[in-house]
Length: 239
Image (tube, helix red, strand yellow):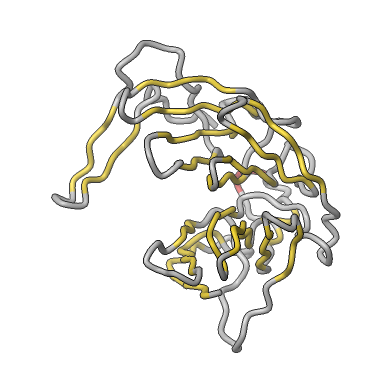
């Protein structure tokens, strides 16, 4: 699988004129190697973080930062091993959080890795990924930072829990659960949704926090179902 090589550039969509443009770095290499199954997060100000993923061969654990105002790349401290694809990152409260992913053999879980930009260093909080005191291992899910009832929280949901024997060409077993992590108390709790209507399990989907919400609301769109069918639905979850 040869990833698209665009030499550290970003495609930017201008909502005011509904047009795409290619933004290239102003400096020469180094910049992140081309990859797929990687993840990105923004600090909401001037930095975009790119982490891990799959080059043409193998997997990565590197972390890079693109400073929008300067249009340049900086390589940062690599995350804890093993290298992986399909991992998830989220930025909030001045820190970058990472969890889950697939290392080529097993789904990763049981640890929340935290990057401090000021120290350029990682530390790890471990938990039991037993589906009772913490979410089970998975990949190609999501991780979001938001305030829930005035508590700084992380939300992880969905993802692939058992890889397909076809590798990148197929979909494995998917999860449909939702978990919240209280950053202050450092504890996980599973979200039990009200009502009979809820989205089916999936991986490789889009998700984000709705910033207009004051009580905590996320949106999920599309993805790959366990049957390998592509989804075009959209759901919101209010906390």
